[in-house]
Image 1 (cartoon, rainbow, N blue to C red):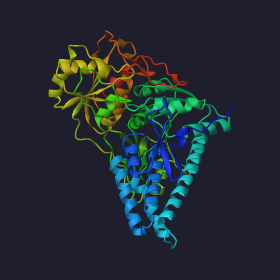
Image 2 (image 1 turned 90 degrees about the vertical axis):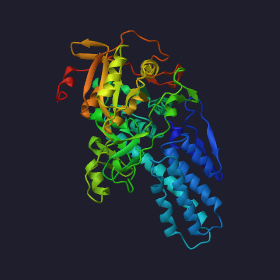
Image 3 (image 1 turned 180 degrees about the horizontal axis):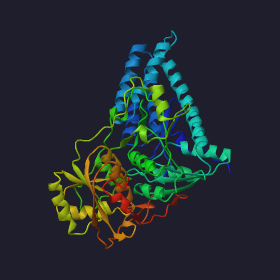
Length: 509
């Protein structure tokens, strides 16, 4: 069967002096393009997440081409100043991505431009040549990845890498290798279920969707052979910055000896992940999907946190797959690191929050309020607890009623706050006790493994046993609305057993 390339591989198309952007927020329900005629429209598409990942690279480059077209008649110095300002405006819209580094191409082109009055035309021509080069490089990187992965391969991935997984699957097919994929749904925008699962299913690749909190479950069951993720940025020391939720996947993959691979680009001037500016988007985005509120009706002023990216240290990465070749983190540092500085990990300001996972008994909320005072903590971080959203729709209601301060986070953000040192203690509510250990809802194993990996104490408490009806029973829906694309499967989830060894003083090591 011939496997067509994904439309996400080229999410922006240049046509007749302007371009159009695939509106990724409408997928998989609609395939629509946004006509872009000026820089302001391009900026808004990036700012509002209409396009992301490779789409924002193309949008920036094509916006620069538009700026060059409108600058005809200006001298080189004026055009150069315009493009530097353009990069600054894009960096303000999405501060984690290195738009200023990408603009470095423009500056080098001015130095090599021929003696001509048409500097704008020269720059526009070079932009289109660069785009063509990037497409070829991405195709080559997909081939390198396919060669690296085992046969057969059960691959876990997070978020979306703009069509590159489909390109990789095409190389798998040409090599006679077998591939199946487990895609995290990737809250809050659901890029995994809406984009990755959709494009893979369209291409005929077997793909199952899991909630973000199920990564430890599928790895513990031996269902994953390798992990491949993208990187919005890489650093000279081998760290990567990617969609929030990437770091915990790397941590858990390491615990189960599963290779973790990252698709990267040249790091530019960034020395380490700790030096990157991590974008924190408005928490309101946690509570809306397709312009529909997903917050409970009673929660008019519910609070949340949305760090859009996290840092995965080089020590957790097996290989970095660049456009030219595959690197070990050591080889990557050898090529790019100039000062020989050791990798540094950014820490938070002293663990000012408690993390709650599971559904507490009604009487336990008073205990949590007391714990906040005893631990001198500011609030409770409360994951949504997909697929049922029990954190958002059950636990949050009772916390609000009993005036326990809390903030909602997506399940994939737990690892970020652990890594930043912001969590002082995990309160894990188990459903029952098994001879092998406590049993909890999906995500319990992930929460405990992350706590142990970061040296955070865990307190076990009995959970509420009565089930509260919720709108979602699996990841095929979100707030009762279908979000899983046709052709994608749903990975069967089970209750999670937390081995007693995890609760020894040494964390079972």
